Each structure stands twice: as structure tokens, then as C-alpha cells.
Length: 275
Length: 157
Image 1 (cartoon, rainbow over the protein chains, first blue to last red):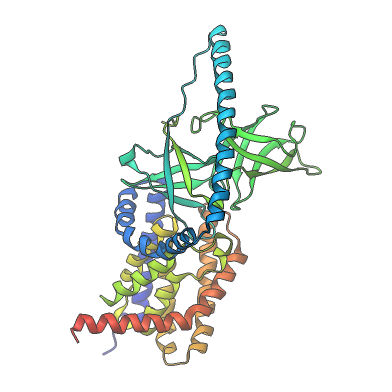
Image 2 (cartoon, rainbow over the protein chains, first blue to last red; image 1 turned 60 degrees about the horizontal axis):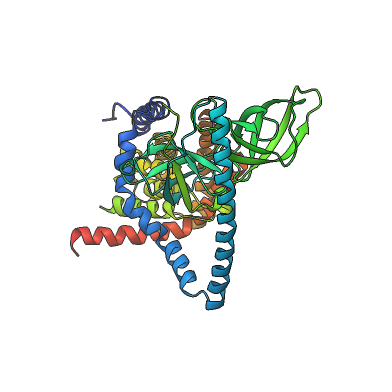
């Protein structure tokens, strides 16, 4: 007796059900954020697997550290001492400027800015998808990290926290194609939006009029608009300004100040203005 | 048990921190897992297992949950159509069959990524499908070994 349904039609029905479920999951995850708990559970289960996967790299780093010569370590120490001296001098200058700034703000009757509260974290893993610029850091909700918090390096802005677990958090880097930052040019105070274009070393400024006062070498910093990032965090340096003929907007390319492809230690700003 | 063992191997390979400059040439280990189960152990494999395998892969890659479920389901379906006939041929012919399947997968991946607002480049995905197909013979042997090992352990032999 011939079966009522062939093997391939049963498989086609299963495929249809799987596709509908997959689409529903994507919508629930991306638009609604309803699957955060599933991600949290799976992420927690994956901790030992990620530890095993990164063990060879960790051992290589450790072996490199152990086999470093004494002369190399002494050279490092000298460089760190010089760096320390330079930073101490800069700190003195900064204290003087802060006092001056506070006095000016008092005279202008403007409220004082609170110093940023920072939390140090370490990059644990990096997404191995070629189109996703995302890292996992070693601080999570147990350390007070929340979704939307800005993440910085010593050089400038790195990205923002997009998912939080008890002992870790996922950070979307500024170079990711889904990331946009309200920025301003430090020199001319022109405002715009910088977006990632999926390259570790490039951001693009969008919708900037071709007459805008911007030039190669300008520093871009967060403008504070939108409430996601505090004002004044350095983001990138302009590396190219191209006037496109017949187009009302200039093409501006900038290089992130943080070396996003070599991140190790990062700082999480606990003063996000995000809701 | 055997499925879990091969899945763990796949997840470890997926989570290995490869140099960022060369991410485009790292094979997609998840597709190789589905290819192996769809071809070598199709009678033990189902779309539900493919679906379950996709969730940790999504979490490691940082893709939205459901992204790899979509790809793995289509791949499982394609392999049910002709995968059973492929196991008997040698590894080179298997590679030749797997490569177009991977190209279909990468095209679907490209389309889904564009819908999700990612800056995807088809050239990178094409390159990844080439390296994934090239990795097939090695991974096939590795999965065979893991399967045999875990299967015998489960049977207590």
C-alpha cells in the first residue's frame, strides 16, 4: 500500500513549520527582546565550552609572558615609569583645569558635572561571525552593569552593552553595521551621526552637508544627544572627507580611536543617561 | 549522546578566537555538523535536532536567535532530498555536492543579514563556503571518530 504522504512532502511540511518558527524567533529576539532569558541560559551553559575554546590562546599568551627576557621586562618598566610621570603631570594640569572649569560654571550658574563612575572589565570572547562586531566582557549584572551602558577604552569609546548576564555582558562595538552614535566635531562643534560600516578601522558620518566645517584630523566626540552616551567621549579621528559631485552630502570617513580589534581591558561607564 | 558530543566539538570550534583579519576564511563549523548528520546519519537526524543545535551557535556568533535555525532547517531539508545517496561516494565527490548546498546557505544567510541590517558582503560568504567545503574531509573523519567513540561509550563496550 502506498503511503498517503510521501517522505519529501512530510519533510517540506516540517521545513515550513521550522521556517515559520525561526522567523518568529528572530522577530521576538530582535524587535521585542522576548528571548533574552533563553540567551541567558544558553550563554551560561556555554561558559565551559568557551573556556575550553579560548584555552590554547590563553596558554600561548601565558607562555609568551613567561619566556620574556629580563631586558625586555626592564625596558617595559622604564617605559611605564615614563608614562606614569607624564600622566602625573597631565593630572596636575587636569586638576587645575577642573578647578577653573568649576569656578566658571559657578559664575555662569551652571550645574556641576559629576565625575564618571567607571568599572574595569576584561574582554572574554569576540564574536567569530565576520559581520558581527561584538565582544563579551567579564562584568555583568552582579557588578551593576545594565543594558545601554557605554564601554570605553583608554583611547575612547568602544561600544555599548546590549545584553547582560550575571557575570558577563555583550558589548556591541561602534564599528558594527547596526551601531550609530550621535557625535560632534570637537573643533567646530558640528553635529552628526557616525555609523559603523562593518570594518574594524572605519566609521562613516552620515548626512553631513558638503559645506560643513570638517577636515581630516578632526576628532569626533559624543554629542550627548539621544541620551545614550554622555557628552564629550572621544570616538574617532577623521581620515577622509570627500565631496561627491551632485550630492548634497559629503562622505566623511573616520578611524575609531580605540583599537577595536585588539581590545583587552575596557571600562564600563556606570553613568549612562539611557532610560 | 553522539549528537551532543559532535555538537560540543562544533561549538568549541565555533568559539575558538581566530584572528579577526581572517574571520572570513574560517569555515562555518555549524554547517559541517548539519552536513555530516544529514549525510552520514540521516536516519538518526531530524529537523528538531538541527533547530536545537542552532540556538547555541546563534549565542556564540551573536546572531539573533532563529537565524541559524532558518539556515540549518533549509540545509537539513536539502540534504534529505539527496544527502542519503552521497554517503557512498568518496570525499571529493561529497565536497562537490556539499559546495553548492553551502552556496545556497550563504545566499540565504546574505539575504537574512541584509534584512537584519548588517553590512554583509557576499564575497566573504562565498569565500567561507569554499573553506567550509574544503574542511569537509577533515571534519568528516573527526565526526566519524567522535561518533564512534561516544557511541561505543554509550553502549558500554
